[in-house]
Length: 339
Image (cartoon, rainbow, N blue to C red; front, top):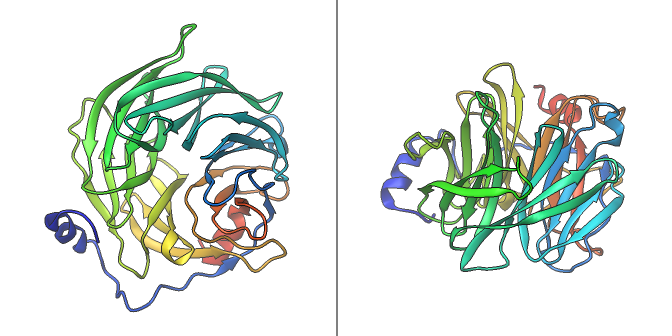
């Protein structure tokens, strides 16, 4: 486990399980899978979901190819468009007024982190580039967005490969977007996955070999990291990777994390972040997932195949084809875990 000794000691207090073997994880069959990405080896990385409120079955999934660009897929997994871009890693979406804005961590310059912004043309199912914007020194890795409830201001969190987290204010009201770094926070070692709960203004970040942390997302708040879950070798196995949320009510629901080391997905019950179960993807006509990096989850009706929500996971081994993304019914996850 990497990180400062004090960090390890603090996180040890979060652990309540033995590390003798990984916890039970039922298999849940994928309902669909995307067309494979065009580039080989480790290429597909992170998905983001847009739900079509007028026709949920025509919702879209975005997926990054960190060697070539970014794809837009249908719920059947068919690639509808591709936008070339150098070394995009994580991606997230938010609706701003009448537009859907996508933000991706941009690693094209390993010395200066950037954010790449796009508008999602939902009718044409394609991404329209808005530009690349510098954030700060270092290699951009993780990326997640937050819409502040009180004023609908849009913020992004860029997780640098060394564990620094730069928060940026994103203003897309003018003809040219403005991206301004407003504060920085720090974890002790490599981190990537992040997600923000828009209801509570809490940022969750995965430090890969250590565990999960929580921050206050408001830029005026102290950048203090609170440990909430440990990589314990049983319920969460390094690397801790992508994060997603299944919100319920004002503060409840689940935080979901990719337990990459044993090809599983771990759930924590909110708001207390208590262990609530885990699952794997497999056992159906579509091959399962392994070595998952990014995940996304959105609740709601996505049509007959996904009546209670859609879970999307990157598949690190889609042999004999190149990597892709798998789609799973959240209703099936809840049924399997009796949640």
